[in-house]
Image (cartoon, rainbow, N blue to C red; front, side, top):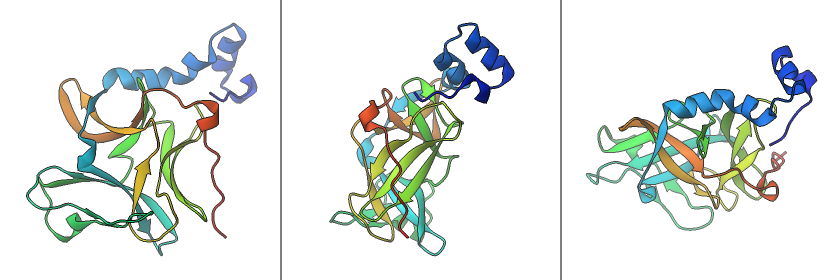
Length: 204
């Protein structure tokens, strides 16, 4: 994990660090509390699709996740190619009880092992010249590296499928034995240094 100098921390944290406290447990204390409240559960990966969904004038995009809950009718259709176009069929009918749609931080977040990172990481779709990346971006100094979570495997426009990078998968948030309407972009452990991402330049 990246670390900043003690001067960048609150006086209490700086004092604890100077007294020999470990930086990682201090930085992860809020995360540990969150992970003690929520657990994770497996999902059927093939029921989901991650999508780079255009917003505004189409020059920007955000993450959408669609889930096929029941087979009553298709919730989405994925085309061929790299990148693969996605037709969000659930937008054309009342999908209540048939599909689930996760479109913002209320519906998805990042988790690494036992650490629920929803309060210290955000998921952003970054459009480059040759690819579109789904990035996990830290919102606080020292909590961890930028990470590539998924990519479209080619440049394009419109609704495009995001393919998860090795080590990443979807998991369901649980509270006790109860499955919640929230999914994690999850990996078992932090990526190695050579897997940590450098954010690509935005197209000019």
